[in-house]
Structure formats: C-alpha cells, structure tokens
Length: 74
Image (cartoon, rainbow, N blue to C red):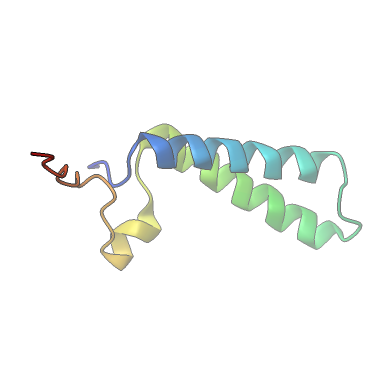
C-alpha cells in the first residue's frame, strides 16, 4: 500500500479517532447503536492513521502526499 496522506492528516486522524473511541466507551451517547457507530469510526480513523493509508481516499482518487511548491520571495 502506498501512502495517500501526510503527517498532519495522520495526527488529526489519531486525535479525532481517540476522542471518538473514548466517547463511545464512556457512554457519552444514550443510544447503543450510535455508540457502536462512533466506536467503529474511531477505530477506522486510528487504524488508517497508523498505516498511512485510507481506502476512501484511494477510491475517491485523493492523494494528500503531494507537496505544494513554495513561493519564491525575491
């Protein structure tokens, strides 16, 4: 698998995924179905952050690893 997002996206995914997992485990929502969805999304975000590959990005043709050219300040 080839990387398809960068480090900043990785840290955002890890943070949001960890928050979702914690909220699901402390029964933040009263509906068990929504808690399971939140837990699943959190696990998906954490796993994709750890392997630097997102299948959704792959199917949508998004590549977040391309570097932007820096502006030349002359």
